[in-house]
Amino acid sequence: MRIIQPRIYLASQSPRRRELLKQIGVNFEMLLLRSDPRRNIAVDETSHADESPEKYVQRVSQAKAEAGYAALRLRNLPSFPVLAADTTISLDGHIFGKPDTAEQAAAMLRQLSGREHQVLSAVAIVMGEHVEVSVSTSTVRFATLSEERIRRYLHTREYTDKAGGYAIQGQAGAFIEHLSGSYSGVMGLPLFETVQLLQRFDYPTP
Image 1 (tube, rainbow, N blue to C red):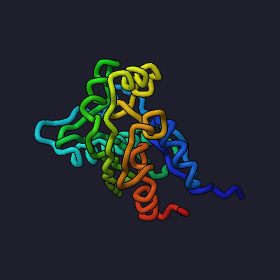
Image 2: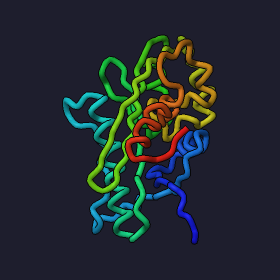
Image 3: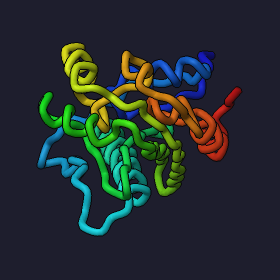
Image 4: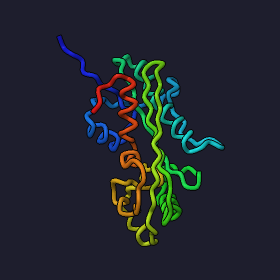
């Protein structure tokens, strides 16, 4: 008799989140969300008026996990917990999303230059009616960045699909003078909080 190993579904295309789950030995399958209006599983990632950064990442990560679980049911896949995450940058309470252009990324980096900002990463797990969400908040201080340094960074195109226009595990790691909080959270999936939530679904964790 074949024993089915415990596993989860990851509702994210982020290679960083895949790497982090592998790092802690979590058995997962990718669950890609196909945006289909007939299925009503699209996730609104637009920040709402007067929505705090923490409420924003909580809402979006939970919506992604719930949409993933809905997709799972529609495709008649075996039922396992669905994990999703969302990361945003907050400077003076303002949410920094993902830049669409190099110009937007440059503007974000200029604002972050020489200052502290917060990186909020929310992780959500859904299985049926059981929903768990947790948020990790880290404080990051950037060095003062010259225009030349910003220009060179933009040539790497690392800013694409990155909240705040940078990735700590890339060349922008050299911009960071100080980090207080979770390195994995700044990468996009806070491992401590992830393990805590998995335990609530009786998933074996390190």
